[in-house]
Amino acid sequence: MRNMGIVAAVVLSLFGPAHAQDAPSPDATVLPDLMVRGRPVQEAARDFVGRVGAPARGRGLALWRREICPGVVNLEREAAQAVIDRITQTAASLDLRTGEPGCHPNVVVIFTNDGRGLARTMNADNPRLFRQNVTGMHRDTTAFQDFLDAERPVRWWSLSLPVDSETGRAVVRMPGDAVGGIVDSQLAAILGCNPNDCVAAASPIVRRKGPGRLSTQVVDALFKTMVIVDTDMTGDVNTTQLGDYIALISLAQLDPRAETQGFDTILNLFSGDAQQGLTEWDRAYLVALYGPRPDWASVRAQAGAVADVMARDLRAPRGGS
Image (tube, rainbow, N blue to C red; front, top):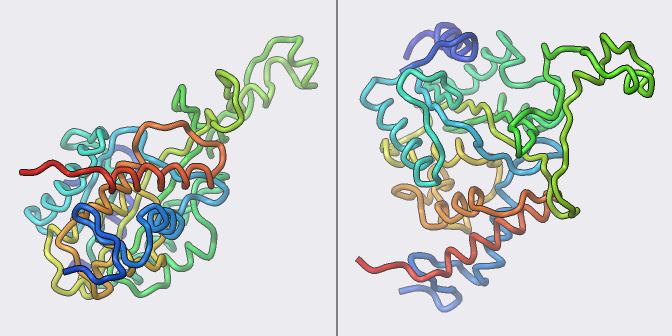
């Protein structure tokens, strides 16, 4: 492994100006390729979604709404490409766009022999890499402290942004945004500002289309995910297993502290219930998360809709070979 300071410097540079790197038990409900112990699949799906979903504070579950560009740091080229392939293949199965070779990475996977130390070093070198002073971009301080301090084989941190679903533009003021602009003199009089330098002109505006209170035109978009893999703690997992694990945590906002032992998921890879790759359960979750549906104004309604779609998919007959 390379010196930690060098690795941290390389990772930090990735987010600067354009730079990229390369016989079931009697108490079980049996479904095609799935067994949910002791309860109906609908109930289990709702429980799972409620446990694992980890959106930014006060926001809904965010999705990738632009192309994904994975990059791997501090790993041999062949192994790094295998991890990238697992991410891009899973993204493609969800009809997500992936960047061309040489794109600027927005999913960065760093391999190190000291995950906790690297996370702390990177945060000390550039705190804004992980947290911005912007509403609705990241999880709370407790979650961030867990990201820095927990001893686990893989840790991750994602940033998202509330955007206008019609235009894709941010609906919150970002650091460095203009502080003023030109507005009509009559509007300036109403707002009580200078028509040639009015703060309101630089504020994001969302024009709602159509009636209804159950959906919203403001949605949440992922724009950066950082994954740190501690090679001293990954054990005997193979590249396919690890790649699929990283693909799932990169494409969805998931809570690393969620208890998932009762579910057939790759998230149990490091907790004594290893899977060979993404399971039907995992795929159903991603399909439901990215499937077509209204952009729900309520976080609870959104989670319920994801669970409902997930349960329907798991119940659906699978085609034979």
